[in-house]
Length: 520
Image (cartoon, rainbow, N blue to C red):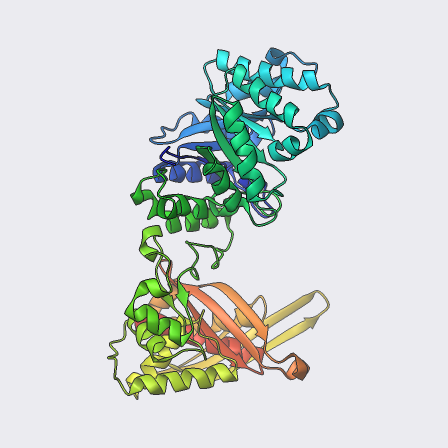
């Protein structure tokens, strides 16, 4: 348990095979540089034998200098009946110019017979020939034993023979792969111990998350003798994904006290997670363990009250250890402690016995009963708190009238919005077209406000969500609209509720602009 654990990141190869994940060459280079700065030991850049994009990536990566990580190219053993030196895919692994080459080979007799359709001896030769060839060319060779656990359960002796073929040919690491992601931790632990007894080389683990046990299986292997683990940032990967490094690394460092990465790297865990999501253009999952915005969120009044007194009562670690922060949620389940802590988080000076606390809590619960929701609409909550604390807050602007119309038939239509608002003694009247009523209304509102508040030109909408609150009422049901806005540095959420979706949208849009001005 004192052996350091090597972290092998395969986000750029295995992770890119996940549904909805598509990296350009520039994306891959940016992520590789960030992973290196983070402190990963290995970065698997891709499979140069599979597509031109990965060939281009390795060509450009050769001009980069990595400070911490060793770059790895990925490929397979030679093809059956083809001499290794004449196998084009193996030759491209050398052309990639990486210090590390990772190849996979077949462990399961099912795959040998039905996929490769070759003899058992030929498969062993394919493994040994390829490892030996790469070692003769000065490469650090990692051998991924594909379908390792399924293969061992099917034919233990042959599975061990494949591992030993790689080791005897000079493989620096033999990695046990739960390729189908269907094993249990007890199975992974038992077979890892067998591998530990049969091999002299270092052992690694590569798991998938098909039954939700990718991280648990990796930990089981590491506790049973493995010292190298492969995974992806945010768990990207085929099907349901790979072992999630943003969960695994904190488990190793903070729970098992295993040496893997410096504490300074672990504190950047959330930043790394969000960075990769942003480059991949995937919305960050708030429920990610450790790094999600909900990972240390507290909603129930009794929970918040306890956390206020002693954080460890409902938090398994200090959130800052992984770069995260506590998040106090406001809802109809809230108590006074929620209001006090959230108000302070939002910048309001609210003392413990402030009489306004009761008024704020009552107003929140009344609005949530009407359909409002403030968990993702902190800006609207801030405006509500300000209205109660200031009693008569200054109105920077007010909407006096609006109109939205859509004209056209079939596939061709035009939407136009008109808005009239007052800023002090001035009245602004603007018209704008848009791709739908909300876009048109947003454009008209911005044009009108920009005359008095030019700084609002920077504000952009990044997300728009609609939820029908009362399906029984049909088309007359209340609608809740949640809008996320940004000024390029920070995001904030606002909410609107009405039987009229346009009016609900306008409420959220107005709150967004008012909050931006209040913060300014």
